[in-house]
Length: 179
Image (cartoon, helix red, strand yellow):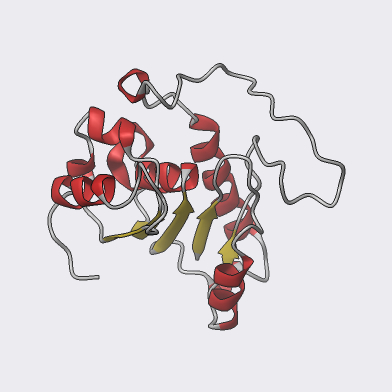
């Protein structure tokens, strides 16, 4: 089972080139739309309205394990849906789950891997964090709590996240694991 968490304002199918390719190779991919999903819908665009006020992206030190907790809950709900499905349950190893996230989705999957200890989900076995929003974890020095392999990935023109933040994250992440 692979989980995919989209970036702020994106949606579960925003990176279909990745998720579909993985599904073709036999993985079950669950990619929920989070509350802020707005840019991929075939329905008219909906305004992003946060039900719970969140700290500013410019004040990562104010973020806590309650910030964007809905994303963690959405990913756990996706696991429940897949493992409860009569056709999917027999083909999914729910004890070894991969988690992929882009931007704020990268924040979510790193949290699920233990960067927020209260979020840690025991079955997450590896993470791919694509241009992840890392600032809260760097501010709280919490990446060292992750004990599974993490691949950080960024882009040259992704200023503010790559390369400095990813270099900092890699140096502060938990024990080295071959990936």
